[in-house]
Length: 205
Image (cartoon, rainbow, N blue to C red; front, side, top):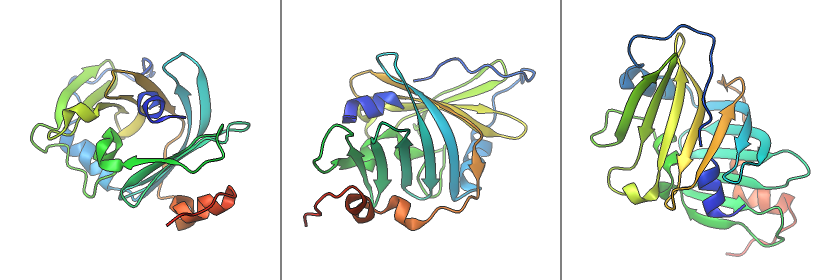
């Protein structure tokens, strides 16, 4: 999976929940508190790619700065964020991963420590759509890097899905299953050298 298809592949299908609509969107301070309340999280996901195809897999977060997308077999694609970089292992290639800075992706905003969505100019959208609060965020210093649209349910606050729009305008939807926080995730899951060895790839320094 190439950089653009990953960043696009993170867009939002309508979120339908059987809860009553809230009068006001969830406050940004509460959403920031929610992210800062956990260091680890895990969920199954369904991804709607820009071409309309579907992928499934597991998402693992270890804040700050680490995330892992494992795709279900036979797809061996892996997206790994660690040590300030994002590494994309293309299932169709025996070469090493494509690498670029985490800071140039919208996901950096929710992997920060601490998350502070009240930061000036970060939030460009904060709306209520039925029972769902939508928050659109981008790096205020580099809006050209793209944006992320997060969808939350309330009572309790919970992340349900997101859409990432990349620098070309492509979008991808990630719809989350049960989002479990406080789970045990070993550090090797986010270790580049360990993943390279597991895939039989050469580590070049």
